[in-house]
Length: 354
Image (cartoon, rainbow, N blue to C red; front, top):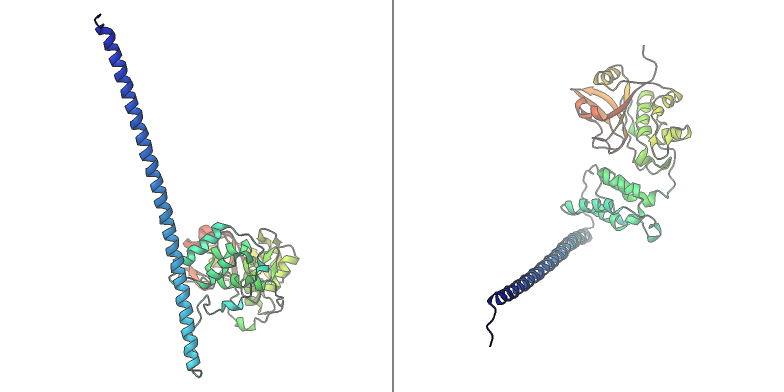
């Protein structure tokens, strides 16, 4: 028998050893990939289970709130039946009424003609969840969202005060609203009346391609100024909106043109002048018994564009009539608070000041 060549034998051993090492590395790599795949699968399953659990919690909470409210309503009804002569408890209404009976809002599937943005609807849902006892009005609107045009949903997302106005929109928009409104009860001689653009008496009336409630801030400010200066109660937001629309002061998709506060005011028999929007210019106009209408950009009063009426300067603050807010109306703001938001200003007055 011939002897093995040690050199050749050594090479073969090294080749085999290298092959076994590579196979072992490959096996380890595959085992590691399999462990990673299982880990990712478990993590995904855990995330799904957590989402399902959170959903159950939310749904359960909403159901509990609804059940409790129904029980309370039932108990009140039973108590009233037991004591038919008991006077109903009266409360002073808040800025936003909570006493509206939702059963009076007659919405049916024939009104489901709108497709709303999911992000806007989610913002309303978030507002519901952030309220301790939920919000029946918002829940109603979300449940019947297809009956509400996108501009109304966006209006509500931006301004919480308009919830009642938006809630009734699908019903009220199809009603015939009188163009003649008695505002004598809103006006005291020598005072500045407060007109809110989304007042039920005129908010649902068309103004250009929208309604007064959403886009009638400019004419509503001007109506307050006209009534304050002249005492003529026929100049309601309806009257001034119709005047603006008929005379080309409304721009579709934009809103009220600035020239309503100049050319439009003069056509209505008053005087107007564009003023510098410095603090001193506004204060000077007020000292001369003029009223000041300001066009505002995004900030305290609006997310886009808006008109407000300034009627007084006191204790370092300008006092405002905001046609889109009962809360901000008759509130004072320093010039520093609003100066960066002012885009234009006009002084409105009756007989020309000398």
